[in-house]
Length: 206
Image (tube, rainbow, N blue to C red):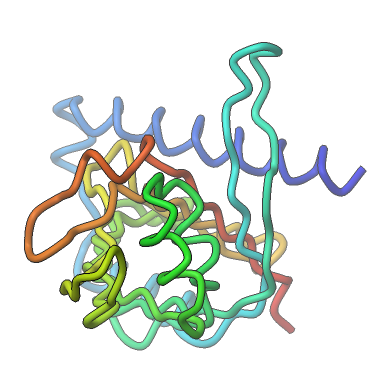
């Protein structure tokens, strides 16, 4: 039952944001963008700390269904009108699609990470926002007999990274797409399988 609820929330989020993005191409929608007062009210509504779950989801090519593979308890905080910090992200989840086994083990051995993001509210009824995740700097890691600067990168576009605030339940839902592993400043496509999808669903706030 919980799994079904998760997938329903994810599908609803994707459908709502996609629909709104289409609406944003319409002249009337562009003309009626949120006012400064509306943006301030929306910012105040979502601001603060959230507790919830981080889920890693994949599309099962055999069944055609979206399935949960991993999850972890975590928290995230909207600090002001442009800053979002996702806390306690397990390094194991960040390394899930790394194909170089030595690099994968080096990342998994690290403590939990923070994902810092910039946010931009683009709709207020309901409250929806784009998310710009910054690279997660993992520092210098030694593997395969050499030491490298390693980081995790994420995609950003209106179709990849976004969030929604469900006012009726006082919860936030976020979506991030991990793009790959960056080694010595270069995206290492040979050490990464494919983009990875992460969803965060908060507990209702009091």
